[in-house]
Length: 197
Image (cartoon, rainbow, N blue to C red; front, side):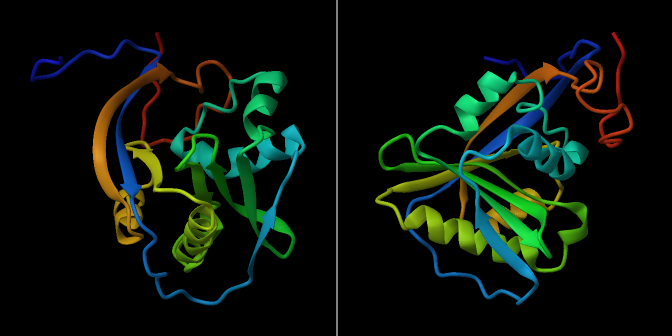
């Protein structure tokens, strides 16, 4: 158990508070704007394509977990039976991602949900979330869940709650700064300063 107070994080490491959220029944869809968005299911997606989309959406928030994986390890996640990948496209260009994991019976975990910077604030997020909820609850599940953290967009947590998710747990995550290992450039996520070891 952590004691109250401040705790040192070693240089070269990053700490985030992770909030886990869930919905236990399908909510009514939220009103949405119309837009140029289409949703495309990607089976056995090319790994370089996946990394490029993932990077364009997640680098500003220090999404790093998939960037540090070998091709074999990444393929074992994104090509796994029971994992569904969807890209939100605008004029044929990937501008959003939803990754759903149905591998645990009765559960769907939204592994990743995100938009490119150009799509934030124009209604695309609500549109994409409505599609994700629709897809998740089209299967025989009892729970749809996800997690977000303090490195993510400041709007993320309230967006998930407005979408029908309720917080149920919180953890601290500590990991190597991916900018120091060369997985992304040092100028990414300027809201989290680089602390060299």
